[in-house]
Image (cartoon, rainbow, N blue to C red):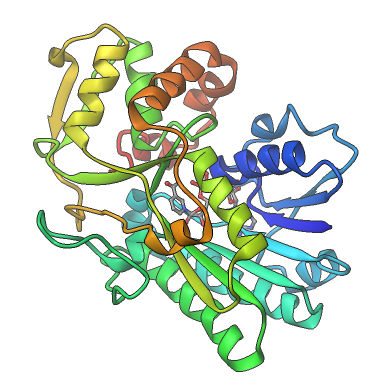
Length: 334
Ligand SMILES: NC(=O)c1ccc[n+]([C@@H]2O[C@H](COP(=O)([O-])OP(=O)(O)OC[C@H]3O[C@@H](n4cnc5c(N)ncnc54)[C@H](O)[C@@H]3O)[C@@H](O)[C@H]2O)c1
């Protein structure tokens, strides 16, 4: 099989390609990535020389290129996106361009090339926020995005679904909760906290750390996508989630792993539109045969260890950012 992956130099995309090449050594994988500030060739270093792997630098909004690359492709797995919520508050239009127009461009090319599956990787943030006692999100939860990031992902989900309804393009969607694991950019919550502490800096925690997120180890997300590609029903959406934790619980656990105390926490203002709680009911994909295999406590430890052992990967990112990005580095996805 020939798989076309978009955004494979990013966090989840690079973990997915690594996972796929290992578990499907007979398949060919093409990775197309624009290498924005969030795309790192260093994340693909260990598989870059695999003869079944090919990298193409390109933008998903470039219709001509996308149509050509998709020739003879069997399945598409679409990760490429602007993914950082705080940046979407500062600069929403680039999110509309990449996440909405880029997805539409890919869908059009997929239709012209008659791909056998277009899998769209989306987020639980399209559903908005939950109160403390609300039931978790599931596939029937109405869309109610509250940030430009979430709204752009919601729009892309609707476009994907419309290509199924209108043109019978064989699509599937996964709406996943917060991922953690190796190769996640240092602007996101867990890597931000860990790398700050490894550099002797404090960790910025919004509010009192009361906001709740659902956390899933990235390899479990990759396995969920694999299963949906193999056994998912076209036209269907699958919600994928892990364990609920308050941000304070997450930070305390990281402090404990690194042998630091709570004086390292710096309490900061909530960002605009800060969603209170996300939680996922994964029953539908569990019925397909998926379950998370990595528990939060153990794999958070492994993740912290990965950042301790792989400074070569993240330390260059500290100085590699233009000014606007350095400002964004003081914030993170919570
Ligand atoms: N990280 C999470 O916790 C999470 C949770 C649920 C869903 N998702 C979704 O999963 C996908 C991947 O997320 P991530 O955390 O790996 O993101 P990321 O920001 O780490 O990676 C995004 C990648 O897309 C590339 N890219 C951006 N714009 C592009 C364009 N116009 N053309 C081609 N490539 C482009 C970047 O260079 C980067 O390599 C996104 O669609 C995101 O919405 C992420």
